Image (tube, rainbow, N blue to C red; front, side, top):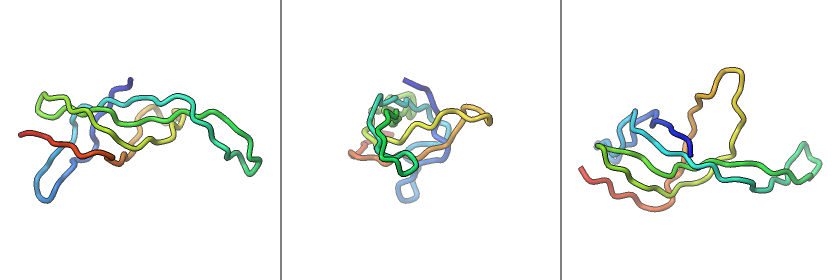
Length: 94
């Protein structure tokens, strides 16, 4: 599991459901197969990541999100912003 932070606030209407800077837990999903490789249709194993939890107001909320292909770190560093799509509803209590 990787640690991360929410880069931009998540809003519902005018209310902020998840503030920017909230802690996030990111799970690595190992080994799905990709058929893409410069048109060669060669199979290769790729990893993906998904958001698995956020902490809001000191409370941990487990979430179910889409997976995103894991891109190796670049020379620019390990920090990267990615977007996840929430698959199941999330009820955050104030």
